[in-house]
Image (cartoon, rainbow, N blue to C red; front, top):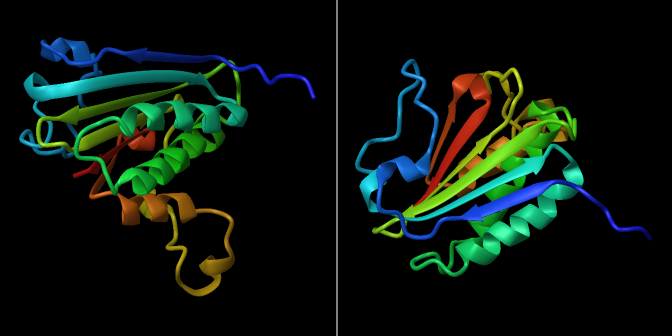
Length: 176
């Protein structure tokens, strides 16, 4: 079996001293934002930025690398499985649905924590977006047998706060 090649870039910046280090794009003002108190850029303790080619084979190794760092964070004990599955689903959705599995496109993931041991994960894709409200509930009627919507359902169940921004091309997930 030949090795699988894909492009993954991981940048760990550790403890931050300046808000601009987060380097997040400006918020879409038409979307409600996470309360300012949830993640004050001045108080972020960790930033991990990962970019990966939109190849589904890249998802598992990236999740494992990110989780290796997350498991070392204070206050995460007992939350690892929820974070890992949510990250897995968000990255898979971004690669498959957002970037259409086009390896020339890039998916980005940013992970940060604050002094209160909360974790924020942002996953961005280059797609056209979607309306999260248009995804039918996967726990009722015929939808139980559907192949779509389970990842979003799981993320919403496992994380403490989930927001879709930028027309659905960006998901913000918080675990406290």
